Image (tube, rainbow, N blue to C red; front, top):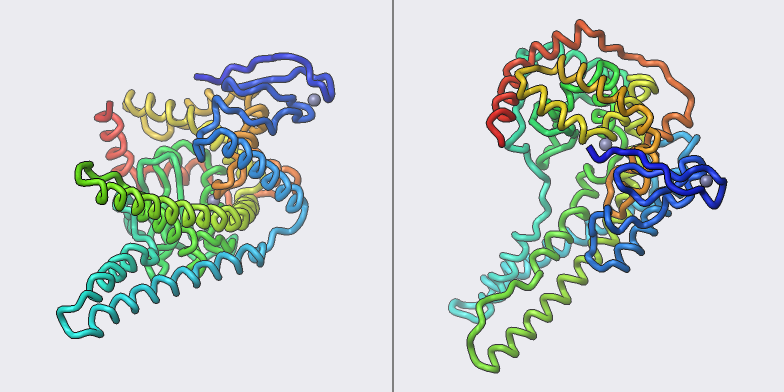
Amino acid sequence: MINTVTGTGACPGCGATTRSVRDAVPWCPRCEWNLDTYDPVRREREFGWDWVDRWTYRMAFRATTRQFTELAGRPLGANGSNRARTLTALASLVLVAGVLALAVTGVWLTVAFPFPNLAILPGVVMVGLAIALRPRFGRLDPDLEVLSRDQAPELFALIDEVATAIGAPTPDVVGVDSQINAYAGAVGLRRRKVLCLGLPLWGSLTGGERVALLGHELGHFVNGDPRRGLLTQPAFTMLGSAADLFRPVRTGGGGGLVEMVGDALGRAFQWVVSRVLFVGHLVLVSVALRDSQRAEYLADELSARVAGSAGATDLLDAALSAESMALVVRRETRAGHGPDRWRSALAEARAANADRLPLLRQLSVRDEASLFAAHPPTGLRRRMLTDRQWQDPSVVLTEARMEQIDAELVREYERFRRTVSWSA
Ligand SMILES: [Zn+2]
Ligand SMILES: [Zn+2]
């Protein structure tokens, strides 16, 4: 594991020893000097040009920490930034109207003139374009194994309890999949509410962390998340797919000079359109995602209300060690063990890692700052909770009840075990 802690020089700000984990550029753990530095070796390329990546990273880091300072210690409302929301909704409306206009014009061109007529050609192209750019509302992930209430009564009862505690509606569809992840969202025009619990994550978490996870995910149904709203959601997807559509694709060579020039001009035009659409997409997404990050802080707050501050902060720490969770689950599953052994093995791994945890929390602020991040950095989310008044849990999941829930999911765990054992 690439988790070694290394001591390096002295901090020029406060004199403390600078530290590093995971081969990161060292920073000062006491005053956070150099934490904001751009780490070109470890950082994923977002644009490909070094100077752009550097510049957008700085913008993202500043915007993220500024938002944290603005929100820390204040009540987090579900309505958030009205400006971001209005802009996103407006952009969505313009986009939907544009596509609608394209479709109507296209249909009109194909039917308005007596057949055969050249107007049919652009007409058909426009209709095709409108279909390709239509707003999409998502559908159920085919990998989701949907559970029924009869199949898992204790799990559903817990979900109901958590939902009641935070004033959220209960999901219409509950299911599991094999990811170290969980999500809550709405699909289709009717916005059916879906809750998905990744089995390796769910099985690895302690009782308090499970309640916190449910609290956070169900919190997404009431936190005013713009990514999930019917009115704001098209802005997140439509411009992006438009940019994809216009990206020039190289076709086979050959042909005369005129053809080559025509081809080059066509491609240049496509390139420009694609870039313009892409930049539009960027601006919109980065404005809207600020609002989305505020919604995440609120979901954490709801999570703490139901699981207590301890459960909610433990869950975030668990997220920081997702990498070792993946390793442990894989190892234990291959040895034929179920969720109870995942948990005990993880508890050991966490205890061994305890001194690195504060550094990992800090490093996440550097690593996870991005204009495209829907979630604020894990370390800041945790800090937002610890800076607030400490809360006691309102729903407690006992060990016995947790085992009962795992027993209800025995078939799903078994299916997961087979997939892990078969995969290389
Ligand atoms: Zn320092
Ligand atoms: Zn979330």
